[in-house]
Length: 275
Ligand code: UDP
Ligand code: MN
Image (tube, rainbow, N blue to C red; front, side, top):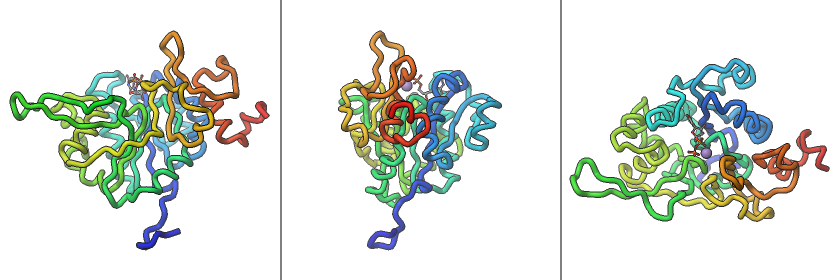
């Protein structure tokens, strides 16, 4: 299918999906992804981690990338992973770069549907901020000045068009993402916003259907779940922040991802017990 200018409609195969993970979360977080949404886009999804894991390598092959970045939550280690994700995306030549964390459920058909509404030949940065106001940081080049910009929360997922990614190259390609992040001393997702909004003077387009666990996830109405692109969970609070969806009980499915998957795609074999 092509549009009025002869451009072919975006297909799933035009999207590069990167999942950031770390060795200690392979079992606790990545396993449930492999059982659920990964199966809808196996060829598109790459996991970026920080150690060799033979068991996962056997399943994922080239789609498990050991970045050799340090396995910790420091700024440098996380931007090191984003730098590798970006370079893999550029080499893939795909129309869209979509990033998610490993505690995210990605509704694959819905992502495709939304991306079809935008042209990869234009500059698009799609995602959702978790702050109500733009980030304000001191400008190291102009004493006393502040610079402000919006960024999409990495934990909610975001997508960047090829056209925009090409322009990011000088600040993000060939490992330069780490240099940029260190220069402004910002976490990886903020650095993406800094490059796009501040350096390239583009804008984040807010897509409400991306959700991180910084939001109150149980407020999403069950009948609205089909429309959402991403949801997440957090397990470390006294009242877990998870989506409200029927299906398996919370012992069988603490993240609610299996229940959501069965709600969206009831034909999966794991879902038969619910019918
Ligand atoms: N992560 C990582 N190295 C670490 C800790 C976390 O690469 O040492 C990744 C993790 O796999 C996830 C993302 O960073 O994709 C965010 O981590 P987490 O959800 O634990 O923290 P949050 O920032 O959401 O509170
Ligand atoms: Mn998280």
